[in-house]
Length: 363
Image 1 (cartoon, rainbow, N blue to C red):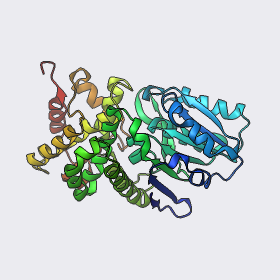
Image 2 (image 1 turned 45 degrees about the vertical axis):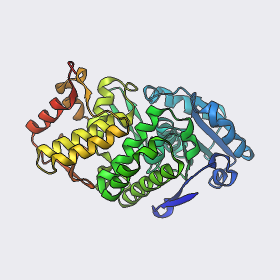
Image 3 (image 1 turned 90 degrees about the vertical axis):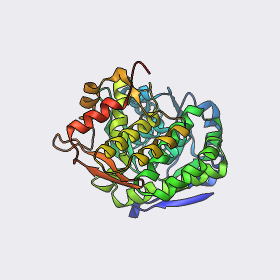
């Protein structure tokens, strides 16, 4: 097992990465401070792993809440099912929530923990690659609105993150690729050596080699923890973690939540960010080709469907959380491993990027 710490003073917490951790009573129980544990999962993950976690926390009178699976259920209606279950079980402020699932479960459980009785503890147990390297770390919680993604939520840190890489063996290929998009993101933001490592090891990652996956997850969490420790609530440098996300969130909202996986949309968004950076003459065509090649090797898309339309795409971008006073801010690239947050781009070049970033109907 590898462990690293996200340093937030009194709210610091460990991130454990290893094999067989769902059966570790010590790890799961060490952060449960009250007398009750409530596990929130979904209809896909629960049949595979819920009983193992229930057995590990059996000393804490555990109950479970099983929600429907899918991004389309990441909304206030589903969140209310968690509140209802907590109230029906007479859960108090000493209750600890455990999020067992992917990013949707982690985000909703975290928001429920942040808001139920004005705050109760929770533990992240992510079971998808994407949630292991991204959403489970850093304390972003929330739900989607029909008009935009992740617009309702709170910053609320877990007590610990427990990453069992064995859960990746049951992960569908498409979900594995979606997680690789976020891993590639860390290399592009501020770690060109990691990007080069990914180029050398992508085949091992696609084959689910445990050693390669552990290394990729550790280095991704390490990169994110370092940034979050500097800027917990995204007042500055943390916005770099949104490389590809302004474009990607627009794809998800525009096509309808669940049509594309988050990682698929982010992968295309990163290519679009790279293309706009090239149009600004900040990076070379060879850099864009290098990025596209790695993303394609991860079996991810690099163009969005033409059905979304340029005008609709641009209007959706205006709802991005990074925008200030109506001004669109983007995360772009000055090089591989060198991302910047900027408003320094022309609308004409952005329009060209949107126009050429779509999959033509004739393709």
